[in-house]
Image (cartoon, rainbow, N blue to C red; front, side, top):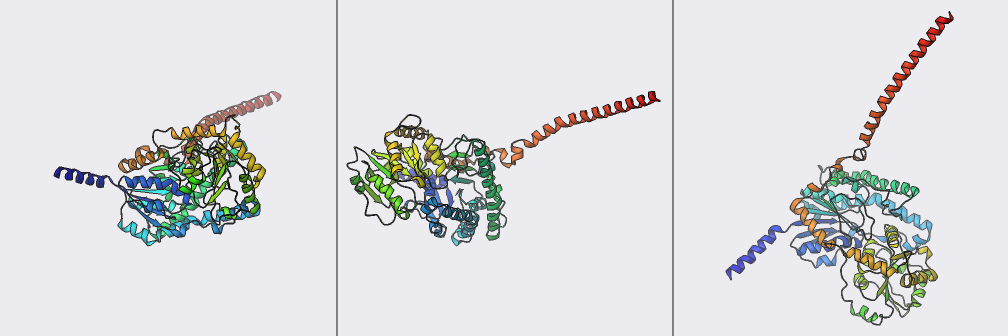
Length: 527
């Protein structure tokens, strides 16, 4: 009995020794960004680590997780009311320009607001004064303000990206941007671009990276030094010393690219097997075995209740003619004119529905998380992209053969019906059914030695145990001229040209002398 108690006490002490304190700072982003870090935080907490999360949205999942504290900045939650109705923006060029102007203004002002909010908050100040951490993890979106936290606590810095890695960051890690074949994340290009596309892609990629480093970093650095850390080094220096980057990408969904060893792909980290459905959904789908059902959900940023009536009727009339049942995510007041085969609900368990045996099609905006879930569960996709990286995501999905898309301006009863019928019953350009192509992508994302979550946990604990100095590229401290050996090539070219020029000059001098001597001899003879 005494021996058993001693063993239990020993195991408890060992657990305390191995447990680490981790700070996760994600003070800005949409709710969907939590899909990237909440599963990792929960798993790390279950392994005994204590995690403090700085966020702009309270997570109910983390509220119910032991060893997790949340510092919530409600004032940094994204306020969509400041933007025009997104449906109007998609249908009107004037409204679209207004929305884009507000987006650009947001890019200029938001990073400074985040920095001031973060470091003027007493909770964060108390944390910095009284606590210690073994690791700091930060999200990438407008969040360079969190870099100095790792410098302050003298810990490794791990970055998390909710999509592909942003331009600028990869050069800080020692690798060059690859605009010749890696599309800018807000474009609709593929990895096979013509000259015009490569020109546009190169310009936008480098402009974005320059903007982040020269404007965001300088502004944030000034605020941090003035507010709380007067000796804080430049943010670019902190970025170059990032220990690890988790990117929410996978080759089955994103284009393959060369990456430094400190970048780890964990695309689909939030994906999981389907769980039993709530009773109301199970009852609605009870007789769906013959034709299956369609899931229609377009994320949290597109309010269905603000949809124009003629557009809503296009969906309603199309769904009414289908033999499939339709589950439609609809926030706001539920319409009373929906056909019997359509169920509209404000919240739905998306992964559980996608993993249901009768799910035949997913109508989505094309967000990366939603596409990962569709691929994970092997469901064809009808994309209705409206912004950010959605057009790029859908372009890759179409190339892979499991999806098609419609622009919101193209949607009417005829086009919508045609697209749905095509996805359900016809073959793609590769002469295979869309469902077969979706199953192939499903097999690709599942065929991994580790799950993305297991990989993320392993590398997080690896950084705590060992750091990643051995993985960092020496080229991260070089500029583009040095990294691409342009200075060396210039020396080689100059070294080759100078002797040729000297030879040419000597030859010209000799020729001139000969010509001069010849002229003198001629003059003498004439005399």
